[in-house]
Length: 204
Length: 204
Image (cartoon, rainbow over all chains, first blue to last red):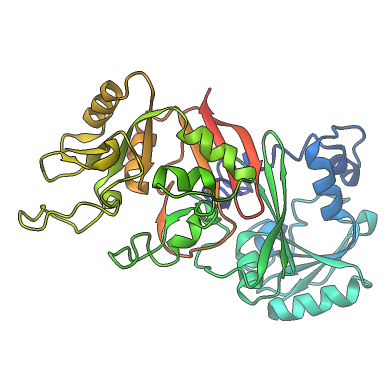
């Protein structure tokens, strides 16, 4: 998240999936060994952010994301070119992923253990499906901001990690737009790296 | 500043000078010995935030603030009840303070070395006056958000300290509203306290 509260820049598109300037919010993570490993890449850095990312990824059994984060285009899926997401043939999740969408589509099984299941009946249904697929492990809420807001507003978030990047986007998708209540989430841990501050919240 | 980027809550008034919920952004500072001393109060706590506040107050020779932070009511000053600010007979500044306003008014000298001078010809003029009064020491930009935005946008801020409080105001005065450029200000130091994160920016 930027200093002005955006988790993506304005004008998200296939060319700029994170919006203009949005890529800059993620520069801290790309060099990390802990990020490269699940992406099938060797090497990488170890620094103050490593343990934060390792902790975040450690116990995840299923992931929920919005249609926009899965990617592609708005509206119904094309039957000839249905778009398989930003995530490539071997997505970095390696577990079941539930995609919130208004447009039904059969599940999409890819290499490395990631299956995208498309859920059209709302955040509650997606959470139930994710929980029962997670085998007792945690359910991750990957984003984007719109889906995060829906779960936050419903009081369904048990833990939240904000990666605060000391930059401004000016315009963009504001994570907390229209929300004035953290539903009991309290700051429990701060890790200061040179280029990002990690703020962990847990429901009291 | 709140997690959603507000430095004051909505509906600022004489009853709620910091807006609804805005007082909560300052709870970290009130118990500190370093805050109590310039307010003429003895005792107080020493914690991780102390050195941040001490550093912030250490070398200030003059302060600039907006009319709204000086306080009172909008529009021209009353000749019978001109309002002497929120700051009492012995304000905590103890040096010259320059108040940006559209409405002229004679200077106001109070106890303890604080003189409020009312500047009607803009941020550049206020900065010049403050600099020449500061005797080589630093000029502090106290706020509120509107004045901070004006100086930020003009590239006139050399250092910025954000006290990030892990709460949401939902609505309110957004510090960076409409700004997408920090004009070279870069994060140089983070101090994590239990209830606030201090982010110091310095122009590269």
